[in-house]
Image (tube, rainbow, N blue to C red; front, side, top):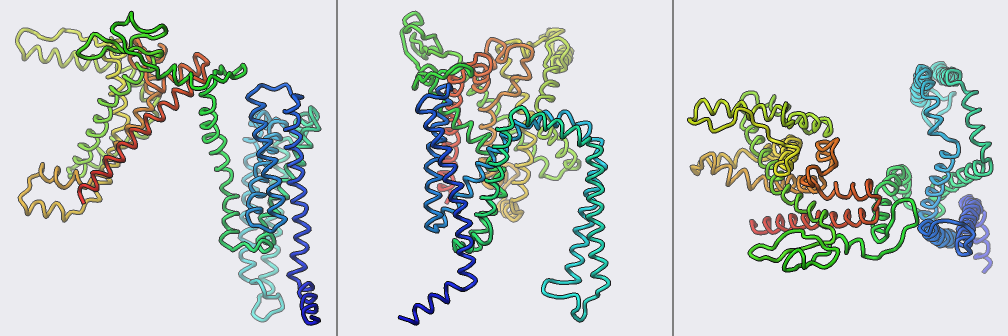
Length: 580
């Protein structure tokens, strides 16, 4: 009994136990931080429930969700940290990062940093030489410090044998010289940046609402302190975290800017569009919940014996083959865009894939000059789509365009050879004004812009095919076509699958080429012949302010792309399994 008490007392007096107890007191401050955040969340919920804030319904709902989730997570963090559970450390880390980001955004807006960058843009240019001086000083200091560490490794002393005291002192002075250069550069930079003017600018911004500015600054400082505490080495030892887990948390900290950017600018809007697709919202007034009406209005179809027999609100979309019946819809423009994009897929995707495959095979044969052709044909992949499309728009001009000029010249040449002059002396095809050929013009531009990159992918796939396969085929008496069909195509199965899937997805998302070709006419000109689903989403959202309908159409398009991709994956899998 006495021995156990003595052992316990000895254990309490060990340095490790004292460190744990000291860090436990520090963690109580982190728990108080989360209790404070829980109190703020409760305050938000109370104000929303009592209706003290005059906010739109959607904003109240969003704040209510944030407040409820914040209250639950902060209380959970308090409990887990108190019980020394590792998940509490991770949860505290995530909450502190989000709060720090929120406080930074508030400070960014409150201090008018974006406007300040615009105001001091010229000063930044003038002060650039000073920044170069600062960079030189930093490099100077780093190099001197590294040399100092090599001359005096950790654990050695200046008086130890073999240590060059003069060299060590020289590197120490070099470090101070580097810091002096940094200081001089910073002073020069402040002078060139007119620091007094900058301070007055930010002081005016803070004076406009000092309470909010100070609160955001304190919130940012507290979040940073809590973050530094939970990711420290002492925290890892206290929670008995393994080295790999501690490094993982530090890694998440470095990844957090990209991760938060993904959540804020991709995942967040994606979820928001899903939610808003069930609302009628113009982007200004309060959103009105309409359930699945947006989807019903987009997808609703009805079959009738004639267009006059369709129910009210339905417009004829297409006629049924071998029958006088017609199919009508409540949104004929959506179905017109779907019909256009499917016709576009039938023409553009084979053109972009097959032309790339043909060119890649020609390049792979090794004829003279193929390397130059490889560079030339890759130009469409790196050229700006809008700029290239504007060039094509000029070429498609019905009166002075190069394409009609070339067709006219070919027709005149044919008239010399063929009897009866079958071709007109001047051919003017309305590539961008005739509804019958406008979509073909879009297909030509798309194929030209995509086949260069697809050619590079096919060329890489061809280089991965072993020469021994072709040699075995030659020994079996296969000619060039048989080698291509029985060796090249099967070996390119995975490359062809990837090229086809990516080309189909790009085709279904077609917008930029149509937009550029149609300017200054309405997008989808002429007579909605070039209307695509993404163009229709643009019209609904940014021209008609029907963001709920636009979101619903966007999710319908997502389902179509998903079905196409899944079908291609299934076909590829069954093809691979069938060859085994």
